[in-house]
Image (tube, rainbow, N blue to C red):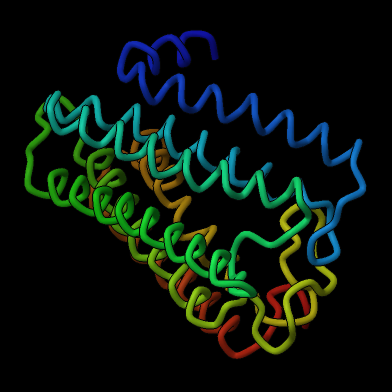
Length: 255
């Protein structure tokens, strides 16, 4: 683990420290979730920023690792600071809303809340589009020092990340993540994914984490690009099926 962290720091110091700070803030939110009683939608208010800080750390560490392969310092510099600014804005706002016991997402109760929600959407659109551009670069560039299976894992991981990141706009348009009931019903521990109704967050989560899963499959589980591509297609189909089930108002955990 120490070797991996040292490699991350060497590969991309900016994103390494961004991820490390995110993990520290996630730990702080975990402590606050046990020491405060403020709730939003039926769960402790600090669970949401906790999840977002962990997600930020995973994403930044992943991008720190794979951007190294591009060997394009100017592009990486631009991506680094775009990511830092956009995600810092979103996470700070989410944390602030947790402190005052209000929703950050889907909150259009006042003109200020609606404007901030729109700014969050703009910030995430910017970084998602930039990630899409990184995907294009990976699809158009050759990597003779890497196995084809690993490269295709990275390519498809980036592609599915972008596709299911944009699924967030479905939730934004609905101003909710639950289908068939208001947000805030009974859910799984920590994730709070609905146990009774459709929940759009599940496909959103699984699709975006293809960015970690598919490269790992391509690196560790197979040395065959066709198998990696097949796994990527299967991953997309299964995650899309979960999304369709949620859109139909059916819980993944209720049979």
